Length: 417
Image (cartoon, rainbow, N blue to C red; front, side, top):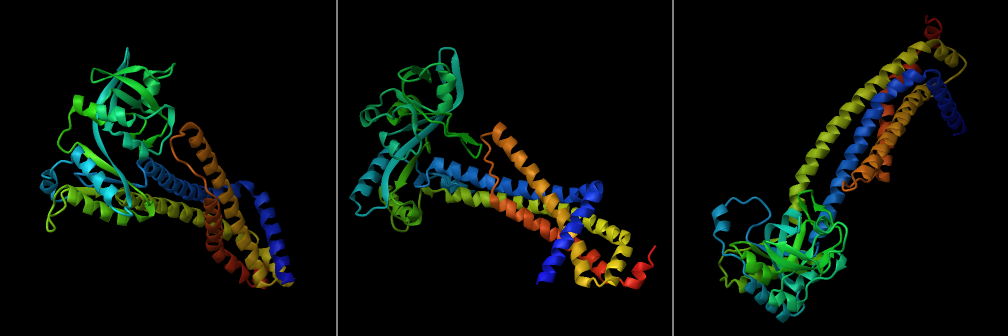
């Protein structure tokens, strides 16, 4: 054991002495590994970033909310069946809440209607276009997971009477009132005056497709007065009491909705229950494609780097053939020679791995500073994986030359010119 430790220590000393003596050659040799490690870590960071961004987006939607809608959140084949479904009505939401209240130990807490249109919001010369206008009830505040930057949500009286009050998303409030508070100010929505009673805190966007900060919430009766409720334009959001039992809650909701819609036992559901799992199922193939592409690029880079290291190790063996012969003549074992060249190859790979990690970490810091909306996380797992990949690459690429060196005949090696 002591002899092995001595051989390892001596092999590392010789390896780093050779690397110092041939700095340029070692750097160029490690370049392929550096590129490969950068590819590995950037791929891992990208996939992790997608996961983080997706989880944040789902948290904004509410991980304890079920969505009752006319259309499902996936591709449909029987298009006409969904098109001919009767629309969801606000009165049906009230009936659903009565059923929930009358059900003992219900997994459903409250149902809230939601209607949506796109419109412009204006104050004087300032205007924000493409804003999502939502009509809902005061119960929506029980579903919200976002805080208020200032103000409050509309109450039951304002909701029932259809008072012209509204709550602005953060971007809308900032654009319309850049240098003053938006509270108690009047904005024009579809040419009608609405009093601002609250501004939501910054939330971000959902997968970069929809900004939660570019929305306005108003009482659904005020929404109905100026926009109307078009066919299929209403959906229901149902809060679940226990988010770990979403499947059971979904089954309960299906039964309750069938009662509300007056469907007979043999009838096909004329509504869809949507939840976050549908988004996850659609995202998984995208993540798999990114991972496969990343693995191909990474594997190609590391393969090129491994060939370079193998080639340089073969050259190093040829250059030091007499040295190998001398050491073997003085009693060096095959294992000692094998370790010497193997550790030299692994050391170059480890240096390349460290430099590659440094590049990736720098890139992550730059992205985090300049693009804060992009979720970037440089995890400790990436460091471990990268170092492991570096060591494996060094062993695989350096083994053949090292094995050849350990098998040299000392007499032939000493006569080598």
